Amino acid sequence: MDLTLWQYQFRIIMLGDSTVGKSSLLKRYTEDLFLETINQTVGVDFYVHFLEVEPGVRVKLQFWDTAGQERFRSVTRSYYRNSVGGLLVFDLTNRASFEHIRDWHAEVCERVQPQKVVFVLVGHKSDMDIDGDRAVSQEEAERLAGQLGMPYTEASAKTGHNVREAFEMVTRRVYQGLLSEEVQLQEGWDGIKCAAPQALLERRASMAQASSTKKEKKCCA
Image (cartoon, rainbow, N blue to C red; front, side):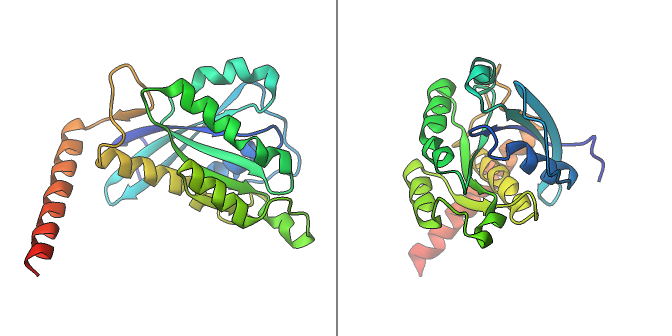
């Protein structure tokens, strides 16, 4: 794959309390690397990865890894508006990090208007569940995700479990939102960049035609 070629660029922001493992998830996804100890993020770190969301359609993913500490919040807030996707991460063994998810979500939503951020909720450190250290049940995490209008998954940077799936989930949700026009391109907004706007219009038209044909067949059945 020629990584210099991409049709879309999505900016994805990592959100959650300090020490929940946002950087570890990113390192596992972008470098397939896990470190037992990792320096805490100071301000914002930057990662890049490429994903083919469908045959011939490559997306360049720009990840903004934000610090969870309150003292860096004024810095990280400046990155919210130019993000189209977000992973809201909490530590399955840290109840407080789960209880703060609503605050993180509300803070981002407040600052991105009129744009929309596509979220996925991630319960991290699922490998700790075997030791009985879980502080948040899957049921209550799924309930919160449903209330906030997003899917939920559990992952472990240590074992690699569901890491790729979590990042691909948010990427594909953004892409589908773009095709369905729930997510819009806007001049001066860097959440999404499109290298071939005409191809996007043609893809949308093709989807609309397919949907119309399907409805006609259903009516005639």
